[in-house]
Image (tube, rainbow, N blue to C red; front, side):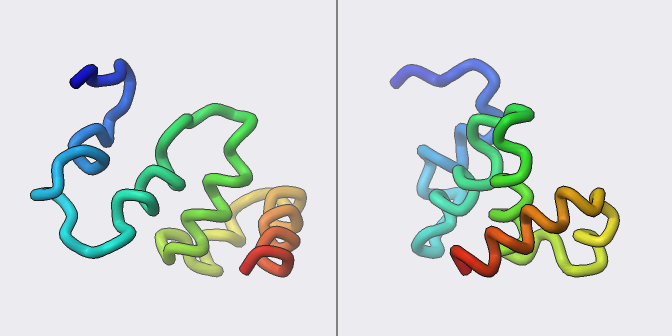
Length: 77
């Protein structure tokens, strides 16, 4: 199988020995796959949803970023 260049988390996606909990692979993909500036707010939202970023950490981001993440939380969960 082809291993994509730049995919740091390849083993998490394709090696079941790394994750046994159902859904962990998709959570990791949500948070870390396709990292680019245009996806930053979405990635922060996912990290908040999956408890990698708490409210204290979220406060360290700009007002604009916090507002956009807050809106996403209100709309999507």
